[in-house]
Image 1 (cartoon, rainbow, N blue to C red):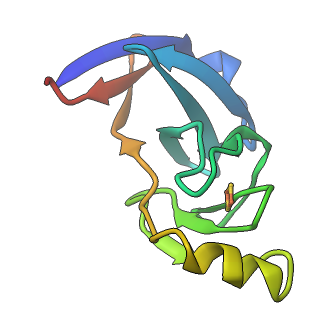
Image 2 (image 1 turned 180 degrees about the vertical axis):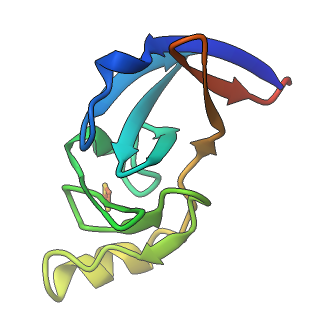
Length: 118
Ligand code: FES
């Protein structure tokens, strides 16, 4: 695992999201309560930017078709429910795909993101 320092911890307040580049990937840092998450910026359905998504109780909802993902595991909680009727049809032509998530830690006043070595 390569740990990469991405942001001063003071730059990510409670409820904030912040996009950083980590080893060539766009990653969204999210502070939700006392939890810190790092996830791929692009929704695995059709690539909408998840930094525009809503976060609640450890789940992020994509702003485009409202797929929901567990922020800790990346597991799909709901797949393309929006818009009503049409969203489910859209979702049926693309297989459910988990969101890429990355481990985080806070050290020396900074947020670090872990990336698996290739
Ligand atoms: S782009 Fe995110 S649910 Fe479709």
